[in-house]
Amino acid sequence: MVSEPASHQRRWSRRGVITTGLGLAAGLAASQAADVLAQTATDFDVDVGIDPGHSPVDVGTSGAGVAEYQHTLDVALRLRPMLEAAGLRVAMTRTEHVALSDMSHPNPTERIRIEQFARIAAVGNARIYVSLHFDGVDSPSVRGTETFYNPDQHGEEGRRLAEAIQRHMLDEIRGIGYDTLDRGANDDMKIVKPYGHLFMLRGPMPSVCGEPLFLTNPREGALMLQGETRQAVARGYAGGIVAYFAGG
Image 1 (spheres, rainbow, N blue to C red):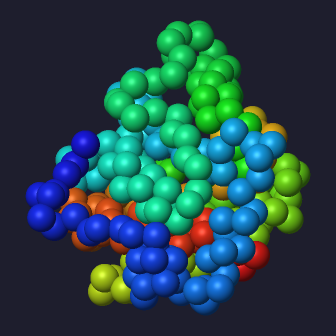
Image 2 (cartoon, rainbow, N blue to C red; image 1 turned 45 degrees about the vertical axis):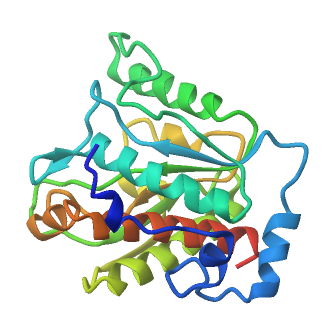
């Protein structure tokens, strides 16, 4: 995991998460914080399932010498305490660089399905599920920020969650001085997988897949080497999730 000196890491109190200008409070008044906490339903195991996408077995994309699975876990470990400081219960699909399944099925599509369904099961009965990823394509000029949801699975709630995260992610990344391109909150069928909807977005709860930056873009890949950028990405997710639970 890419890390930074402890002296550079931001402290997050409950008030800081919900009422500062660091992205978690954008658009939220202090009175709405109580609403976020009040909505913590007792019939769920957790409020937020966080999935740091990929693993050493399925590395994802890469950029500037760092693989996607490394960045996703780094961001997830920054995100979890932010959400917990806001009073939300959190479960992670992984806290180490390991896959959840043996990834041995001979059919690659089935291999992906088994792994993704194991991840969804790992967070238990969660109110929402957020899978953390980074983008990558053949062309190094492609850049920007995008969030996906499955309109055929909790469509309206998935869209609302994706839009909240997209909005806050743009604010946070732009807040550190990079004018990221807004690629939108989009139907996951836009990705055009041979098996249709992303398996990670087929769970029993509103779910999104975040793609904050393109690791294959030289500038964005280099930005992700900076702790400031990874912290901004974590704040973008946290701000969007808090806003979603507050009805934003």
